Image 1 (cartoon, rainbow, N blue to C red):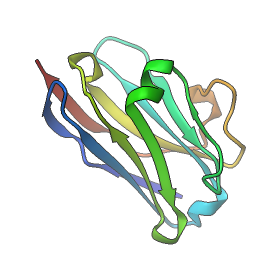
Image 2: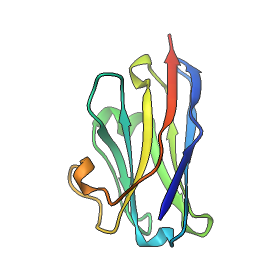
Image 3: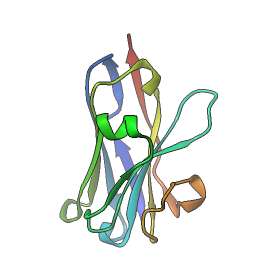
Length: 125
């Protein structure tokens, strides 16, 4: 599967952005989809994961659960990450990623079978 992330850009603190991850080359419903981000000088960290059907979702920090929402529409081959109440600390390159296994208790880059290219999010104060 090929993944194309989009929707990044600049936002003010407190604003919102919606990232999209469009899949091609394979059936999206075969994969759980996670979102990761990597800030300058930091390791890539897992934000969320949504199961193949969308029935189960995981957010890997409580603060993200309050502000971020992941969803999917397999008919559209698309997964989204809605980000609200953005903070300057959210500035990072955001990646979507796919795996044939279910969402793990804690998602890590080693879980990933396929990566999308990143999309840059810049939040200014």
